[in-house]
Image (cartoon, rainbow, N blue to C red; front, top):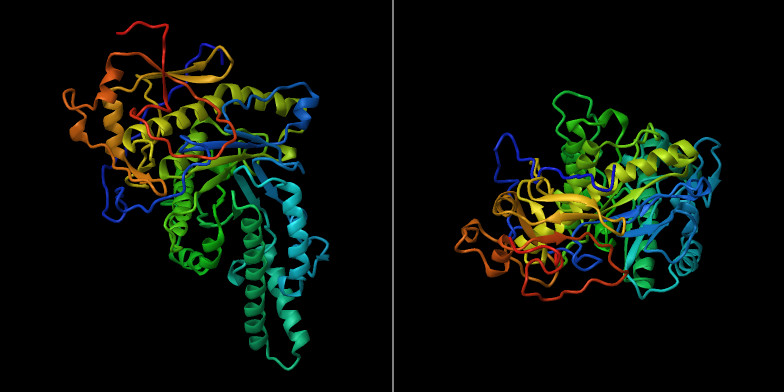
Length: 497
């Protein structure tokens, strides 16, 4: 893409059915308050967490200027995003499925929790040496799941070892009794490991938002079947409610929205993603808090089963676009070292960042800010009224263009039309930030005579919407007389129209 090329999507892909059910229509009054953004004025942020060592060796630059924070998955302390793999936090008990070798006891009920917490304390202090700045702390413990029934497939080994351990300790038990005891003790020990480790993290570094990667999950597979809806089953929702103890301690949720190649450029991808995000938002509201924990989805720029195939623009809409529209606080774009391990893959990724990923990130993050500042007075996040609609936070192609600016960073240039603003009010409502009151602007206000003064100025003056990467600082609530205070920058080189 050349520096002068334009990248803008339609502002809304409106639902073709036009059917809304009472159970899915949302208003600002029906939504609980949510945590304020980590960066002031950024209702949806995208975070880089991709290794670049091989690309650097080949002198291939990866443009990360559109990302709100750039982090390396390697063992580098003091980053905005810290990803705690199993070997970086405590003494996590697990089994190597291939070798059957057991580490730290193998199963939670045979582990040494106190020793694990002591090591976890040292690990947290090492990787997050200062607690003065906000950030994200993600625990990536994937070997077993805390609910017995969810340990299927290769994870059945944790059930088998737990049953064997119960029968060894109590030889007189029948098989049924041993299974029941093994289940109780496994779930109790698993809960203790996760709960106490998470509690330790939130106590030591309270300004970081803590949670477990892949939690919650929707398990909404089967997208190749006809009639796929993406809905989370009632059974899965009930199981997620059994994890209330986890949601009560988590200060952020980190579900995964990775795509397999079979979902590429397919409508099922959007259905899968929106329901995973919606389930995360649902469980975030289960604890009795004054506001809900934010949801940061984990996305990947390649397919999980074909890691040299990059997501298309349509796939980005189905992942990042869906997440922003449903109400997530942001996305972590994660990558494995195997994804970009040679010159060819680095060149392809670099070109894709320039042509597709960075322009799209600029599009949705600017649109999210625009909608927040207009519809919610900058005091809340725009959320679909109907989560299952096809409405997106996209800039209007008729009002905006996205180009590279003089500094090489993508910028969204233009001003919203009355139609653009009406589209926001039609498809979206507001989820207010904690401690703030916001009320969606109504269609009644959107007439030429009744437009608020702060908006009428946009009809006579040319503005530039500048996408900026904020400094690492805590979010704060600033009052402004202009709804576009954090979004628009007047173009002094142009005359009034």
